[in-house]
Image (cartoon, rainbow, N blue to C red):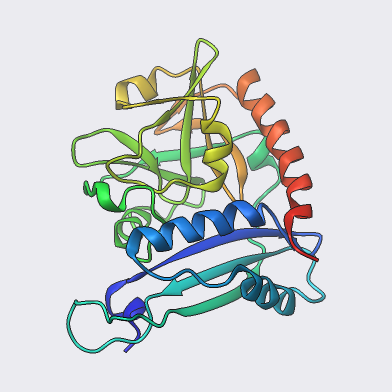
Amino acid sequence: MDRGLAYGDGVFRTMAVSNGKPEFWLKHMAKLTADCAALGIPAPDAAALADDARQLLQGESQAVLKIIVTRGLGGRGYKPPDPATPTRIVMRAHWPAYRPEMATEGVAVRLCDTRLGLQPRLAGVKHLNRLEQVLARDEWSDPAIAEGLMRDSDGRVIEGVMSNVFMVKDGEVMTPDLTRCGVAGVMRGLIAESARVVDLTLSELRGADELFLTNSLIGLWPVRQLDGQAYAVGPVTQRWAASLAKLRATSRDEFPA
């Protein structure tokens, strides 16, 4: 009867754990709270989540921590229960087997056929209804393709299946506007402060000097190839990769002792 299972009525966060501590804990808690507010779900207590995380991460050095918050139990029908009693789920998983060269030499990506629907009310929110991403990821099985890029129903480039997208042209960093759809990731937020947010067309993307992807687990991956078109792992991408690596290391101090 949980509405997270019945309707995807909830939100989640995925965090990298290094040296036994989650990275960017405060930023993830702030985004979790904001996403809960966007759906009208009471946010869980951050101290309780920290206690959950500490229990799960005992003896772990590198792992993945995922927090799911649903609206909780509800009867039949779409109308949310009032008041809601949210369910929180905290999970630990093994660190994915990403090859180190993916972060230095770059990755190959493809353009997905599955489009993102426009829904400004949910834009930016990391909600539990990820069926568009499920369908997009099911489009390929070639292990040489690390990620797929997704457009909205109007043809604008929005994001990767599991990542946010940045392009560099003439030294300027740009990232897609996410006010109509898409997920605003924590790593994206760090770079977007210094980037220009634009409506990004596919032709502009193909004309970029550099492309790179971000999320909380991969950090930054340069794109070396998009559907056979080559891109350089250029100086702007390299500078941001180095900067994010430093920020990730220092962000572990945010986690409450």
